[in-house]
Image 1: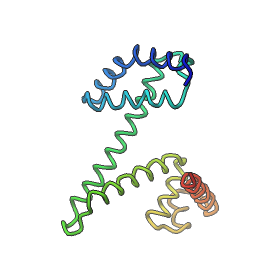
Image 2: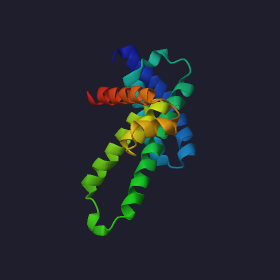
Image 3: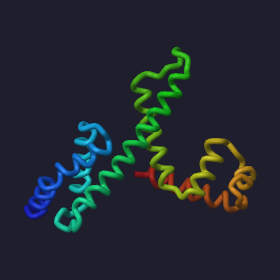
Amino acid sequence: MSAPDHSALHTLYSEHHGWLKSWLCSRLGNASDAADLAQDTFIRVLTARNAQTIREPRSYLGAIAHALMIDKFRRKALEQAYLAELANRPERLADSPETRLLILETLVAVDTLLDGMGERTRRIFLAVQLEGLNYVATAERVGVSVTTVKKHLIRAMTHCLLLTDD
C-alpha cells in the first residue's frame, strides 16, 4: 500500500469508524458484534478498493457493513437450525464439538454456493440433489420441460465445480 493510499484509509477510518460502529450497534443491539463488523468492514475496504476513490464514504461503508450483517444473520440462522436438529437427536448420537464446527462451516459454504445460483436453478438443484426427485418429477414441480431441468442441473454442477476448483 502506497503512502497516499495509507493516508486515505487512515482518514476514512478515523472520520467514519465511530459512526459505523454506532450505526451497527443500533441495528445489532450488541457493541461487541458491532465492533467486530466495523473492523471487518474496513478490512474489506482495505483489500477490495482504493480508499481515495470513495465518493460517498458512509453510504459505501454502510453497504459493506449491511452485507456483512446479512452474512452474520444467515450463519446464525444456519447454526440455530443445526443446533435445534442436534437437540432432537439421542445423546449417544451427539457429534463432537470439532465435528459440529466442520458441519457448520460446510453448511455455510453450501448456503453461499446455493446463493450464487439463480432461483430456478437452485430449486431444480435442490429438488434433484436433496429431495431425490427424478428429472420428470422435478420438471412437473417447477413447470418446465425435462430438457430445461437438465440444462439447469448442468449450470448448477458447473457452478459447484468452479467454486470447488479454487
